[in-house]
Image (cartoon, rainbow, N blue to C red):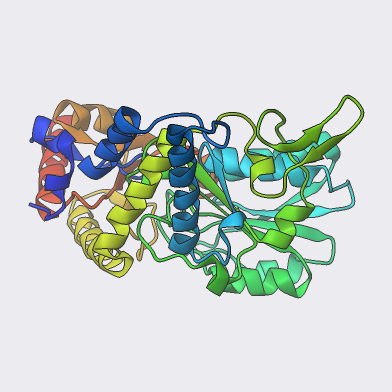
Length: 397
Ligand SMILES: Cc1ncc(COP(=O)(O)O)c(C=O)c1O
């Protein structure tokens, strides 16, 4: 059994469940659940508003987590960390805000492998303000076509939007290369870290990333909380995108002065307990160590992939060196039939297009089965999945 399974109460209640859908959302360790419930039981109040002890303590905890997130991803300053609802919210924030500074002569480059969260906000800008969106292709070997980027980026390109790790192919993007090519022409880079952050050490300063987005719920934290990192000088140039309480210095009917970053991007009461949970999830990951997490994840992914490839008719959609994600199709058998039957056997995987429809079109498949691993998984989960899959195939074939 994985050494880490004991930290996850859901498996105490459901010992036979084989959970292989962490790419969609990870289960929660007891420390995260406890941190949130203790916060509600002992400390809770709104933040940055009250002059009483609960509010001061809640505000302090909230601000401390901002520091913790900054250190976790290598940001130079906690003011570069904006709390959002998740990756989707972070990218929409950036698109809405930066969209006000762009025009129809500008270009944005988005890769062909993106999750819809990092595609549709940019396509929407194309429709609304006429900015041109160009698509960075993925090669047959499942890697991005960096040569295409060299050739097609220009002074007109304002932003390059790429995932740090595809949620279908499972392969990491060469972020340093993308940043180098983009910065050469003065373009900025947004990295979607929804899948990357949970398995790999991320250092936004070392990678020189301009904007970085991720979700709490995929790193063993709660739902409803995410992060948008942005370099301070860039965030300072962006207009706010939502308006309301706690984001203004002063308001009169004639004049509004917004707070500086990050608070001017956090209008309204934020998800306070979720921020507490996120802080605890980061502690959980850091206590284990990101290097150890990555090594465990890579080893188990290779085992999963090799066991899967022993089954006749299996075709991988994921990259050969994917991390934590293995997606595949099986000749002539509907992924939905397989997913449903696996679910009936207590094996949780995801089937469909995984919110990456253009990627599926690119590789000529309608939908796929995705197995994604978390810290609580080990070889015995893979064996149970393979065994269940073989039984289902002998029934369907
Ligand atoms: C690569 C990638 N980007 C973005 C998202 C969206 O994340 P969220 O639904 O937490 O906003 C996901 C979620 O699966 C993802 O895998």
